[in-house]
Image (tube, rainbow, N blue to C red; front, side, top):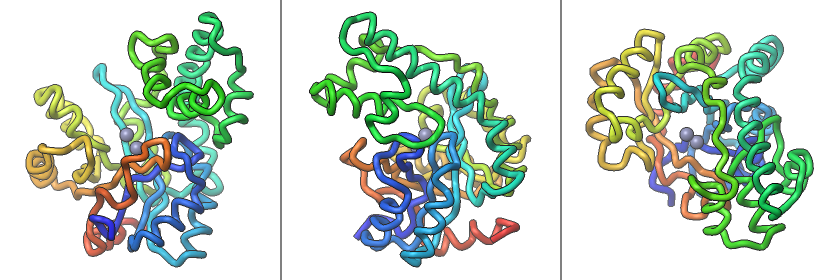
Length: 287
Ligand SMILES: [Zn+2]
Ligand SMILES: [Zn+2]
């Protein structure tokens, strides 16, 4: 059995996960989870398939997203839950996220250019995306590593080193193109969703003073929750929970599942109880 009944942080092949949304839902059901949320990076394109699969496998959950943001010199992730992805909401999401796609794609295009110049491989972004079978409008580093292991026959470790700092495909990217945290919160609210700061312990560990400043910015903008149960928060759970209590934010949790791209992470490794999940769901106007 999984550690938790509900996993609220899961990626599919519409961003940098390896599984289809349907496979994610099927595996969540098989693992014995009571609810699951799909939170792909910066895309909502997997949500129709996710919702259809939830009906097919009869499992509770929420439509979600994990928006990349950049503010006060930090890249921060903002989770959204209960997002409306149809009709005018889809248009608003597309317009608002298009610069995020530019930033993400620029990073991978630069990396591919560096591989080409180093004489290692010569592949266009479109060929790369098609070869690995990734869906959606944005390119991701985990797929680039997947490409290198499958078609360049290097080890997972080497593929990782190539894209890490100092590696042959170490690609800096235009982080300023990403949405600001406050804009992400506003966008999520505009599409009917709750906004949750993902794995905030990462910044708390690095810079507690900046953490408090950024948390205050976000709370003023209407932040709804903090992700508590997550690998990056390990050892800081009590502190994060304390900040959540003081700011009247609810807490969430999730494994940050990526399928075989992160083989040591399983659905339900982190999460929340089903009763906690039901309380969060009741905060949503459209559920
Ligand atoms: Zn994240
Ligand atoms: Zn994630």
